Image (tube, rainbow, N blue to C red; front, side, top):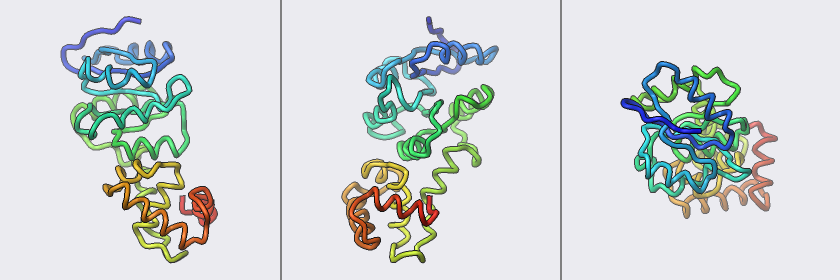
Length: 214
């Protein structure tokens, strides 16, 4: 499917289903928005952005059965890439949590009305904040919540780290989300395991679920 140039607002898409690309293009309707490029593999996302310099990147969380979000780590910081909207068929909290940690602008399910996506594209291009009731902000607030420490000897920061770990984030992603170093995250994880008397991150996550912290 060919892409079009846009005089006002340009978007790039990373999705491996042609029907999605066609659907997005049709949904743009009379809006002065154009699709300048499309990637079907996660390995193409960085070159797609570098080549076309779009105003907004719309991407799936997984492409070809592989983790597409990880490709965002190739950018030094979110400011070095366009706002990213994850438009996904995956509703798992772990995907949403990782999108938040990687500095994505929004996370929209493909089951949502198409107007939700176009509105998000326009807001992102104008630098407006993500809606407070979005999936991304809902999960982000849950992860950064430091309450619940009374259930254990965990500090507020350790409680935040535990929530991130329980959603499947790596130490690097936890660090990005909380603005701390990977080494600091590792120290917190070791303290969490010791205080909860568990052997690994999986057991810590189970503890968090059983205590309704995530």
